[in-house]
Length: 119
Picture 1 (cartoon, rainbow, N blue to C red):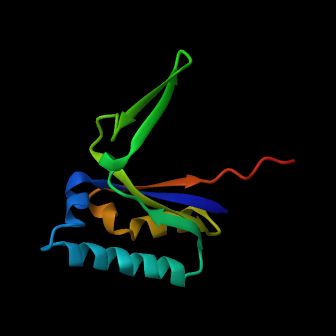
Picture 2 (tube, rainbow, N blue to C red):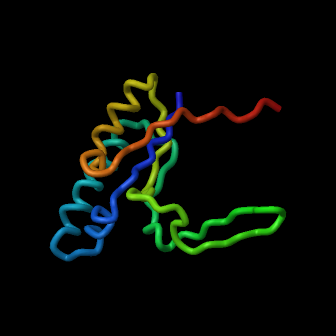
């Protein structure tokens, strides 16, 4: 079964990426986690994301396109990256989610991936 792990980080977590005093520890933890996930052979796809302020939100309202820079919703956590993993059970997906570096300060959401539509 395929699950998406969505890594939601706080603004303080994101700030560690570029802070000379914390960047090495931050990236070291993520590199270790990413290495373990790949070594387990369960990765289908995945990527880290740029900070939310670089995002563009697109909505259609009454047939008109609305575009907003950065996160439109007032959130305390931002999506920092994701993996699609293939594991036998939700319990195993949850175990991998719990190992992510952001689980202690942000959250890791786990969702079952829908299969492609039958043709």
